[in-house]
Length: 441
Image (tube, rainbow, N blue to C red; front, side):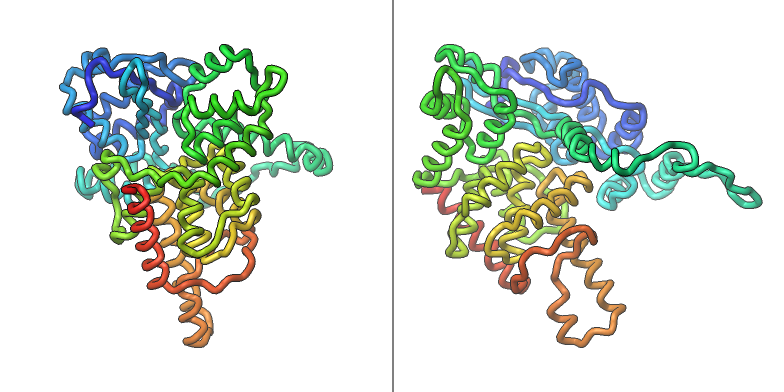
């Protein structure tokens, strides 16, 4: 990547226009010892490029290099440190006129309370600064509570002060849910579809989009890996009376992509250089890398082919809807698909079950495939510990040991026999081999 990156390379930054004070403190005291001063300087300079609209104009790396005052190789290394810790996601595309164009998505740092609840982050920080200084930082950021010994709590309850009508609240529940989703979308991954260019091309054909179509087209772009020019071709073919007909567009894409036997893309060379923190098996590492480079629909098809089945129209619509909500990057959606179909051994993706897991992962702010895998493992371990306290027969404990546990509000999927850890690992290995073989063909 360093050989391709030049001072004249164009980039655009996406992210929050400014950080609150607690996250600024987290960057300075908690992240800087881990990532280093150069990476922090790069993050702050890129953050300064972002306007109130949440993105920067197109800029050249020459100006960025002058601001951070280090060489190209040092900048790339600093960028990789930000990527590895989860503060940045980097995308690239080839432009016929501009060459390689980069898109940087800056992620907000964890607030101090969330940082210290993450065991991996605590480990990294303590390794850098030592236990004594680590404890001082814990004391600095730990929430301070009023000593209650000898005190009487006279705080008024909510219902003592505020009027609350449950009927009116329920009547507006859908509106509140929609509002909630809009603010989750502000934390979405960086746009990889050049909407400015796409809309300019639509104007050349005198075509327009209906309100709300942009999010749905973006979901189709993510799901099938369709670039701007290919999407334009689909849009022109599905237009009527100077307007793109989204229903026709979607059906045309689905029919074309299902009939087409194009090979699955092989992982980019740059992905193999990304450092993946954690204790993962060889098969899991390959699955993580594949999840970051393959569009979800191709990933779904690959798993179904390995299991001897096929993807249903309902499954395609479910994944398309999930992507349109911008809760996760494609890689996490792929791990979710893998979790349901491979680990849980479901024949098809059940709507209630997928939505429940997606909600759980979104509330836990899972944004990387490694985080999803670690979360599944931790849930398994908690279930094993919980079961050891109950009076179960040895046979029952044996069959119960690897089942995923989820919050009580999550609805169980149709019952399927849970595959063994050995068969799960073997299926993951075969899936990784299959995806690599497809990428080489």
